[in-house]
Image (cartoon, rainbow, N blue to C red; front, side, top):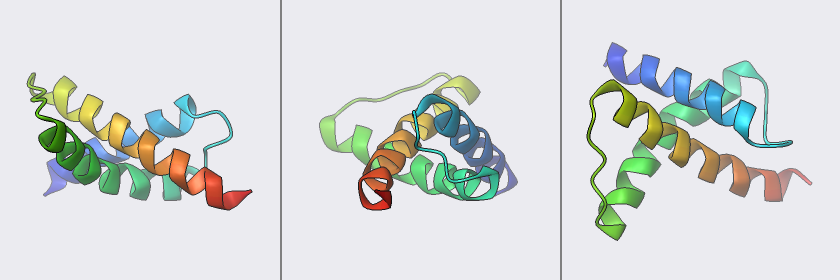
Length: 78
């Protein structure tokens, strides 16, 4: 559980840095990163892609999921 929280925190922070204008502040980006890990896993499973690689793969999956969430949330932010 702590592993998932730390990965989500890193993923949310990275996604906030990657998305232009997509940041919602550190705390919300961390929460979005945690949710993004779940979304990323679901997204990759749906399209049939399996990312392995331990820590790096988990962070990559979380960042991609968090970027997707930040993109969608940015549409409503405007």
